[in-house]
Length: 180
Image (cartoon, rainbow, N blue to C red; front, side, top):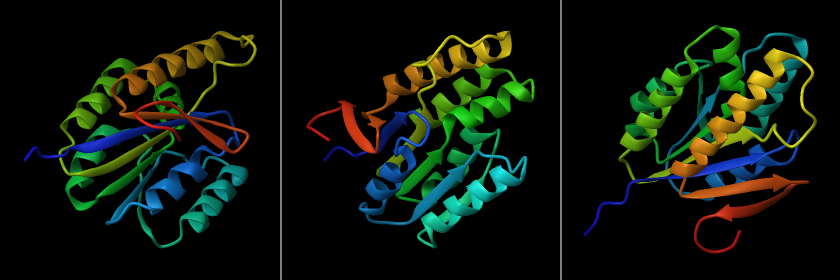
């Protein structure tokens, strides 16, 4: 009998599109221990409030790990303990890398290698913003971020078994067998 590996599910969409809510609802339906990997940094009062609201929304169903940079390494460390992992959010992680001067390509490769090595049956939900559907940003840093996010999302979509695009609170399956 073939061993089932971890199923990778990418959930993308715009701001306040329902990405995280969909990932949480889907993950909650899957049995087993659950982990939530948060990449947000509490940089100001508004972000601190958002982080606290997200913690309340998750409740006690998830063990939370806050990791703004070394996400690939963390996934390898915790993978054996959980049937379900949510990584939220890939684009905040990317912002952390860019603003910290990290090697984006190296960290992306590390994350992709980590994802390919996950062997325990279960699911990993990766939440990411779709930032390339708006206007072209006026400054170089914002264009660099938008372009890097687009490339990162494409690479994640390549390795994902399923991809959903959340639009106005409605998740639409755009990759994977069957309908949403």
